[in-house]
Length: 639
Image (cartoon, rainbow, N blue to C red):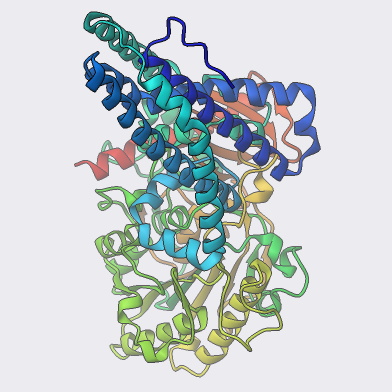
């Protein structure tokens, strides 16, 4: 290939840089589209949308990536030394940029494999926990082969681009005043990209898959850094405060709850006054990593993977239409502990200030309960230690487990059987005080790399999620068998539920079937077996537990007792990265930045007119909940 230098200047070094970057973006987009396995995406119109919008985001990202090259062209003088120095520096910058591009592209494929998404706020949070993230990659993937091929490709691309960069880098430079004008114009371009490129182009996309494929991973990562804590009132649809108050009053009446809000409390505050005397039963709450209802036979899922949990359904209260609030553990912990809708941005536990909110633990603590959070990994992850200790729990984690009692562990934590054995020992010690207790246990084995001790189940370790699900089920069966021999067992309520499912994105931003999780409440001699088919949410777990115990309290929870209030007031909350949602009466409301609102049929994702009375009523409910919850969180975590 020959380059006609003509009137080109050293700023032309940006051309090979741009061509390499845009070519990689196109290749990645083609690969991810193929990986989706959805033939409809390869029709002419969807492809045009994906690659047309994608090019816009690629160019936005490229404008920031080129900054070092523009500055490099600006600073060197236009003499023999300056031209040679510029070319050398441009080569060094190109090698660093291509290496970073190779590493980030590999990471993007791994991230897509895990989350079916471009980089987003999860990637931002994971950058903080490099030990867990890098350890998970090492344990889950053939890192040596991936490093070899990535390095080989990086060297090949650099070798192909280097001659052009070297030749262009030694060209004459415009005079200083022209270089300054070019740099100033480039700064204006960057401002335009910063303020002008946003979520609006994604409005052209017809579904979540198109939107993710049309994104640019580097731009999305930058945007996630920028939008990690979104102010609801600035970015989302809102209503006048009088309307919000009226809507939440109607919601309270529909749920059969009594309003008790003061000017300092949220609009869903109410007095909970049980019909009978309080019961001082213990509570063991187990949140199970990534266990969607589609993996549990008793909930209509795969056969044979969960024999213990499926058998437990015959002796438990089961909740067949319970929905997770999010796609990460921290969202599940937030919902179950604080009874809060999943407000935009970061979950409360990983915010810098995360105390001051009512929790399941704080209510039980006021009634004399010992409170424990027991985790098999290191509780600095997702700020668990700070969050739970700030809520009055005593936190136990990997640092408290003796190495000699560990059969197996991954970067995320010890095997579930070892976690449950440690939990039983810890509970035994606490039970000696004679006080009732709440023990919240968080499992980790149903997480990539899906490894566990040999000889426990008939699926080999490290062979995929099915084996991890079956192992977790085996560990829970063993845990309950061991617990039955404990003196505190007869006075204990066991609650098992998932923190989230194993997949979130589907035909829409918030496909309900991908948020559905199982829940069991088990207590022989106290709990009567029954299946509740009511639509409910993780935020309803804490009020339901407190309802079973007949605990009186002044509630600022946004959840409700599924058993007592759930029949007349069925709804669920769910969210992904930027979209928060609300489901009621077969309609899903999606609220997104720039005030965007969509209503869809829960059954098939079909779009419904937002101006129909039925849609308008549910939209107002969704906005009222999220607007109020967001303001309440901001008030309590920034005081």
